[in-house]
Image (tube, rainbow, N blue to C red; front, side, top):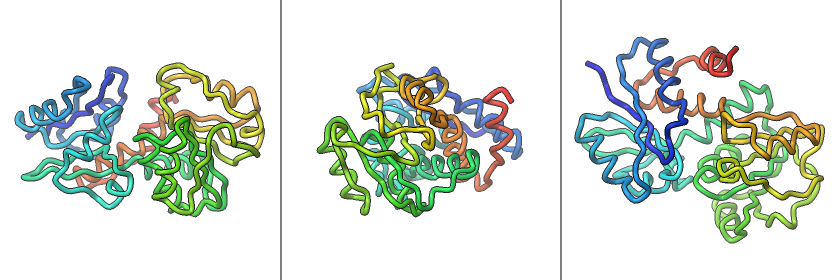
Length: 264
């Protein structure tokens, strides 16, 4: 019997998740249907309830609903509680939430990009749902220094306080170079340019944008500075593989799937 899954967001038409999960299903012999659901900005709960009522087994959550999904759950995993955001829902007689974003980012950096995180200095730009989902995993990866910066400093301070030894800093006080700079802001989706000190990113830096499928202003500026650059497509594939494991109990291989999405 075909099991139904979907990704829910607004907007969601650009999502590669259906293609990724179709490839995973083919690799593992699972019979699933996976679709996109664009929920109204004020209609997340109604859209999820309708999907469940129609027999849906699980959902991936994308912007802007990860915190709404956290509130929707009956129970949550430890990493979802730490993030206070959910990107994976499992429907049984109850609703269970998890967050696979952090492990997806770390696996992409360390496995796909061959960038060990231990001992590195990391600057995380943003303090919303995307950033909340990855801070815990970055800290667990034994990085040497994690700075969270956000246009609204209070949000960065609140996030950093939950994940010691992370520290918060306003954009205007950032200085020095970082090994890795990760853009988790909404600027990449809106096309806005982040105004950052030039010293933050240099030839020895890695610039990583969680957005995918677009050459963002952040990546363009980092490339001009000589940095190694990557978008978030690998993170998308790796977090999807973790969601697939949660739903089906089998972890699909990701390397060939990522290569095919990149046209390799």
